[in-house]
Image (cartoon, rainbow, N blue to C red; front, side):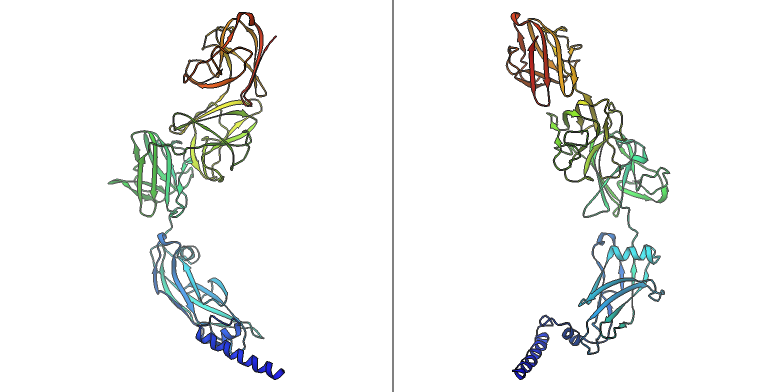
Length: 489
């Protein structure tokens, strides 16, 4: 039996080696067989000897290094590899080292990584050729462990100067004016990070671009080419001629800057940037929920959205995209502005995260109206008024009888005479805002069914107080629960 086993082992061993030779080393996995077949002098080669890097190819291979397996001297031990790359003249004393492990015989040096090493590690100069060296070091896990180092090979590389990873717009035509500390941040392309885009309102005025928000105004700027408004000039450290672009007609624009090609595309658009908006924050009913927050209501004007709710003490901002805290937002220009301020900025990212604030002293029901065309906002407390010839103030829209507010409920306590009434959320003009009207015209005070009327649109139904029903009443309305009570005293 032992003789049979030994014979079988020799046969399978020979078959395995033959299989390796015939199949290009894809069959029979034992490492010792692979190393024996691939044994030879350790050497490395480069796919190119002179390379010019380009940021447009930042994710591609700049140089591919291939090496032979070396030898384990017939020990059957496995071999692992290190690749070392350094500037020529350093004697490979400050290399970038790649631990390739076992069974790998090539390494692609990526454009961006190689460019970063040239500029930041080896003192290379953009546009100037730098000589590099590479070698492979093998470790043979025999007993004792041994290693081998290949001869170094040389190749030259010309690096590029990377463009800025951030880009800002500043000027009288922008929503923030000449406030460099709050300059409008532009959004980089996911596939071409040197391309930046702004979508939003621009006013009549001028603008240019900066690479950061430093208040010294000494950073790099991009200004208009004197001969071509679709071209940009890169002014290093604030140098150069300060020629700015002009907006002669205010409105929504899309502005796209390409920092490599030094081009600028400016176009107007007639559609709103976003078709849905949401309120996010602990002041709002949905809290800090970026996945399912409460949604604004659209209006007949596609650029204007409204939201009405009870707001408690806390902060809020307005999301224009879901599921991403660094996505698209509408935020105030400064943190915690006065609620009477109408200025708003549309931007993306997390760097400047301004919010509106509701304090404990002004918590209550609010209506928020956001104009995305003009980047303006109104945050107004919701008041309810009772109006009509059945009420003390009659049909006086300028000074209707106010209802009191507490804990989400509006209350009117007072007389109702024979006549009609309805409720307004404002005073001043008949068509300015919303009304709470009866479900049907001439509706009895015993029927509390109601609907909302926007401005002067649609029916103008009212409750009717008969002479026999005149007297003192308590009327309560809870807009959140849509419940009304009318109780005669």
